[in-house]
Image (cartoon, rainbow, N blue to C red; front, side, top):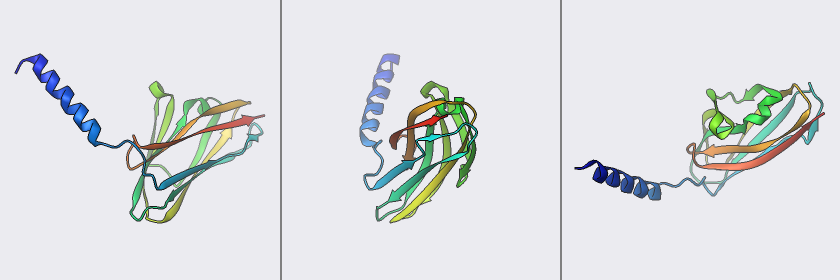
Length: 147
């Protein structure tokens, strides 16, 4: 098979596969993210993520992504329950915390990030909570003012 034909076959297979794979999070898993509107520099605060699985089957918390801009003025000093890994993806301006935590049917699971602000400013950006895989995420913009 010629190189161009092979490329065409692989491209078609990729398009067909993409059509069969859903990148939408489950419709019956809900996410709420809560944080204070403002804090004093040096005052630790929490960002609380509540994941509600209203489905009759189990799902999985894959990861939580937060904007790197938040980390330019504050440190993450705790995550509970602990993630098993975290890494920065500068190309999409985010830090990913990997969990692989099961979300039992008809249950609520909370995740708490504790931050220690190091400088004043307004920190704004999208947080993503990914369910059953890293591409099926619920997004919410979060803004905090550090005085």
